[in-house]
Length: 218
Image (tube, helix red, strand yellow):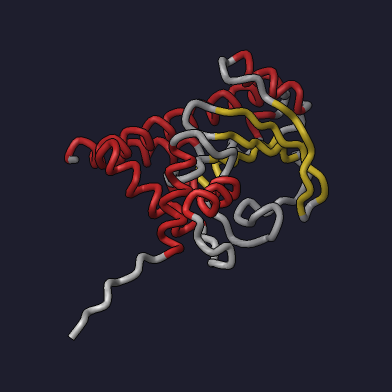
């Protein structure tokens, strides 16, 4: 009886190759990394592309194989600290420069980063409620030592909103300015209206404390 050799999963091969391309800086983004993976592995182009969930699982495994679990946890800790610093600088700017800034909801992190998830393509989405001009907020961030921000407008289900973006050391930041009188549901995604998790400075600080207990035991 001849046993057949199991064939490697082509989607898993693509995911591993895409993660390597991202980790080595050979890809401009996730989709470009997958395209490169197809080229490098020469897998049938009709094969299903890896999902973000599959890619994140491989990214986590790749990082832990290179730096260990502790190394990964320390990177997440640093990313959370950086995010908390951005939140603090935003809140300081609003309170100091806007007459009724202290009455607004505090800036918050939204999406995966609000849960401390920074695998694969780390991005921190933030909402800040303020009547300050977008350029004033961007200048405050630049004065605080963050990279030179860029400003643009994005389409949302509430209409066009201003967005400030800049690369941090551990993640890409995208900050949406919410006018105080705009009726935006804090618990809903700005584009699709789906439920979304969010966390303010205190919530991020709690995550950092919990993570440091974990790293102490790693």
